[in-house]
Amino acid sequence: MTTVLQHVVRRSILRPFAKSFSSGSPLVDVQVNDKTGVAIVKMGRAPVNGLNTELLGALNDTFDSLEKNKATGMILSSSIPNIYSAGLDISEMYNGTPENLTKFWNTLQSMWINLYSTPLPTVALINGNAPAGGCLLAMSCEYRVMVGSKFVIGLNETQLGLFAPKWFQDTMVSIIGPRQTELALTSGKLFSAQEALKIGLIDELVASEEEALASSDKFFGLFKRIPGYARGQTKNFVRAEVLDWLLKNREHDTKVFLNSIQLPHVQKGLGLYLQSLKKK
Ligand SMILES: CCCCCC/C=C\CC(=O)SCCNC(=O)CCNC(=O)[C@H](O)C(C)(C)COP(=O)(O)OP(=O)(O)OC[C@H]1O[C@@H](n2cnc3c(N)ncnc32)[C@H](O)[C@@H]1OP(=O)(O)O
Image: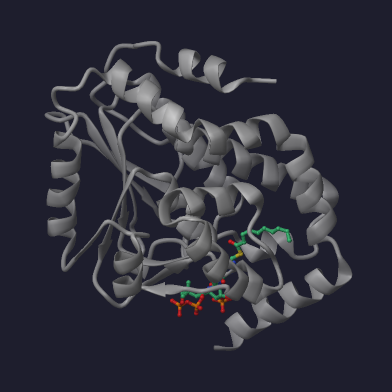
């Protein structure tokens, strides 16, 4: 079992910086700014950036490579108009075999552990709707900028007859606190951009992608004179409790997912929800 401390030490080792970069997957586009070393990572799985095993794996590989190649920061965004991510791909969870469900869930866990614990400064540039797993991605970054006021963000799992796992919940608690998280999660609330700003679920609401990039630059600028090692350690200690739970309970978490998702009434609810989406 990996402890948080081993995790922190392993991830603080410095390696040389590479200028060119390819994500190795058609689902993820990566552009590294040669001058600043900041990478813009854009998810591009049509139609809605549904997080299936392939996209989750590609994101995970991308985060690994950016660290190995010593990028100086990462902006996580989407190349699909009006969509950040529709969350977990429901087709992966509907009628899945235990083997596929296990692989899917383990890939999600690995991706989240990597994103949540990366020493790189991270910004979510939320340029579209971000329900459920999409909200998790954004919440796992350090700073959230939403572009345009027409989008929603939140953990709406209960509306689908599901529940947000403990580490999804804890990630939200760390941002908006237990009271607001309980209210939001039990009712499956999707926050409007204005509501999300008011409650602190997003840090900024801007009108254009250019403004969002300027806000990201400003955020990265905060760390110009801060040694990366000191910043990385601090981030990891602040995040240790939430991270540590999953590092210590991965198998248990997988079992809970498998047992719950395969319940007949949960499967029935997922099927109906998928149908309702397709009928729109
Ligand atoms: C019980 C144990 C624990 C479980 C833990 C589970 C944890 C997390 C759960 C999740 O992340 S579940 C996913 C929740 N997501 C949602 O509720 C969002 C659903 N989608 C939407 O609201 C809308 O699609 C959108 C994102 C607002 C976009 O709207 P738009 O009008 O642009 O597009 P649509 O026409 O609705 O959709 C296009 C196309 O995509 C399909 N689709 C949409 N979302 C998903 C999804 N999450 N998974 C799979 N497929 C999805 C939708 O059916 C359409 O398909 P076609 O009609 O083109 O076949």
